[in-house]
Amino acid sequence: MAKIFVVSQDLGLIDIVSESLKNEGHGVSTCSKPSDVPSLVHNKDYDLVFIDVHIHDEPHEKIVDAVRKISPESEVVLITSYAFPYISGHETDAVMSYLVQPLTEEKVRNVAKRALRQARISREKRHLLTNITAAKKQWEATVDAIDDPIFLIDLDYNIMRANLMTYRRLGKGVDKVLGGKCYQIFHCSDSAPGDCPGRRAMVTGKMASDVIQFKGLDERLACDVYPQVFAGGGFVHHLHAPTLSYETQSELMTTYERVFDESLIPILLIDVDDYKIVDANRRALQFFARDPGMIFNVAIGNLFVSMLSERAINSLIDILRNEGGSFKSQVVDGTGRDVEVIVIANTVKIRNRRLAAVFMIPVGLL
Image 1 (cartoon, rainbow, N blue to C red):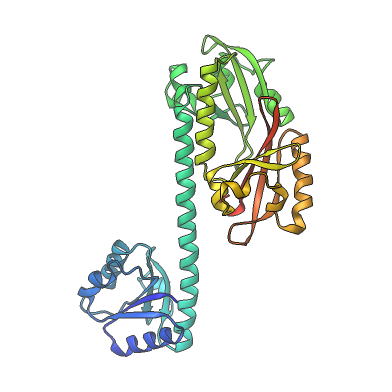
Image 2 (image 1 turned 120 degrees about the vertical axis):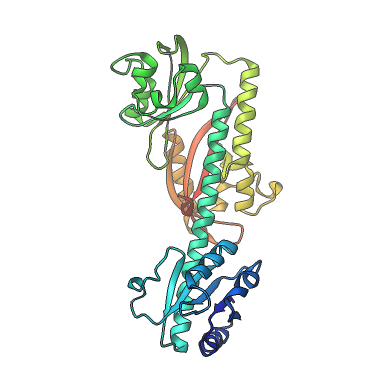
């Protein structure tokens, strides 16, 4: 049942619309005085607001603006007598749909049903955008906090993104770095050096690493290059001291654990020997609605839709044998729904134990 608000000075119109919507089980409130709209809408969380354009006391545009300002989540439907509302002068980005007179119960019902469906989709998109934006800001803030230069290049060696430490170590501003060739900026050369790990990563599609001289930084550094699997592609470069002290390793592990636990993407850590879960981040526990004690030591195959479980395990084995990759499958979330996911996995060595990090990204987030 939806909460719907109807604004009109035509009492007959209010009766027709209200009765049609109530017959569908919706909760309906009405208003015939435009000046009362702000107080009646405030804190009511209406799903839909029907506004008659033929109101004499106040321009309907002003009422629409008031509703959108007070209740931005409410969707607006204009009631008009124009057969073609989009050329009537009533069109605005704040309006979702139109209810064209003469009114019938079937017409009111169909317009409300369509507008509610569109409103639900709009809310889901806004919610998704909010989550993605928050995840992006979280990632950028975390990467900027790392004391090593980290930057992303495309297939033509153009720098697409870099953290704050990259600019500081280079002594250059954003306009002098972004869009430039990495070999020109970091090596002061017209081409990539022969031992460039970035070039090897492009050829093999796998992580590459080497210790090379960076003329632009006047320093010899280890360079780890990781192919990026997300939209747009590219290669992430991490520059760091060739040998890491125990303190540096501990600091990087602390940073990793924070990113792992606060990520908005479900991440699982599995033992490659038996494919059982040994760790899970907070988002994974929420997604699968499991307490920590109820997910650890569980075979990861049990999370997939039963008919796809064996195929998913075989796919995992293949991509880990090839040192990274991804595949699409379906898992059962905490509510019992089948959810389509992109599964990305790569091996991780902790001491002498061989593990795998498994990212389960709901397709709806991409």
